Image 1 (cartoon, rainbow, N blue to C red):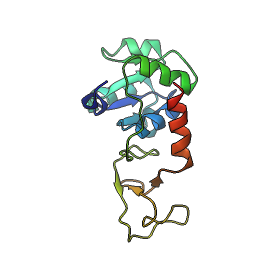
Image 2: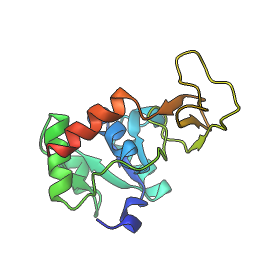
Image 3: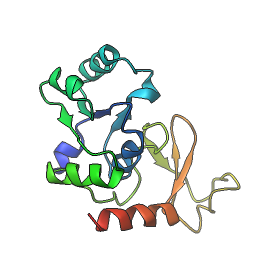
Image 4: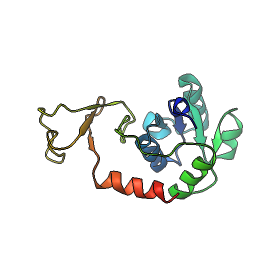
Length: 154
C-alpha cells in the first residue's frame, strides 16, 4: 500500500477497536464505529459512505454490502495485522504521531516551552504531541516500543 493509500480513511467496525489504535499509530485515519455512535449495520454503512471511508470488518454480511470493504477473519489483533499486511497495508510506525490513539483526531506537536500534564514527559526533553480534539498527550514511550516490537514480528 502506498503512502497515498495510507491517507485513504478507514472505518473499523465494532469488533476491531484494538486494531484501530494500531492503525492510527501507523499513520492511518482509522475511525472506530463505536466511537462514532455507529453500532447497527445500517449506521456503519451510512457512516462509511457519507465520509468516504473504506470499511474494515469481521462481519461477512456487512462486508458484502460495501464494494471495497475489507473482510478480516481472525479475532486476535496480531493475526488481524497479518491479514492487513497480506492485503498490502503498510504497517510501519509513523515517524511522528498523526492521529490521536484515543479519538482519531489530528495531533499537533507541543512546543518545548508549553506545560504538559504530570503523566507526560517534559517537551523540552522529549517530543510530545497533543490531540486537537480531546487534549490527550502522546510521546514515543514504552507503548510505542511495544507496538513497534509487535509490528516487527509480523
